[in-house]
Length: 144
Image 1 (cartoon, one colour):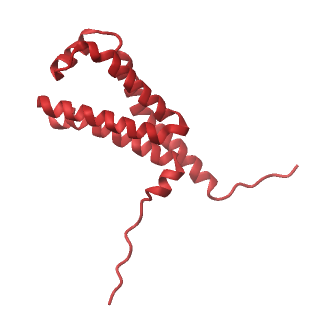
Image 2 (cartoon, helix red, strand yellow):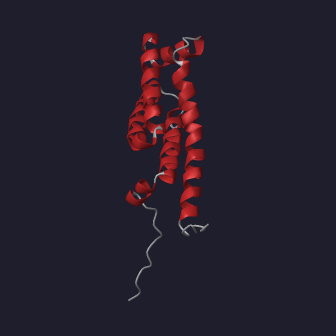
Image 3 (cartoon, helix red, strand yellow):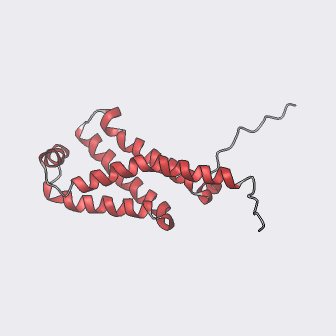
């Protein structure tokens, strides 16, 4: 029986993919909870929609849209599309919070934090995205 040796690049790629899944898990779990709770029609959801100036009847549709975007993000073949759709979705949340004058760091920027975790997780688990958006070290300046 012949043992197949792995290349020295296999392990970092595997570790990066695992780290990406871990980083992606937190915002995905939050977004699934946030989307699912919109179907419950409980008081906090109705209160939040009233505070944002949205009719409570839109909650189910927005929850369905959010869950569909998360599903696209979680499915590996459409993860980049899902990240783009969720970026737009979260941008709308930022706009609503700015419009009603909510606090900056806790409400307005919270969707930015969620989006940053989504993109960081995708960047770690998707080698094609890392090739497209590489993190580079600063190039040395030539001395004259």
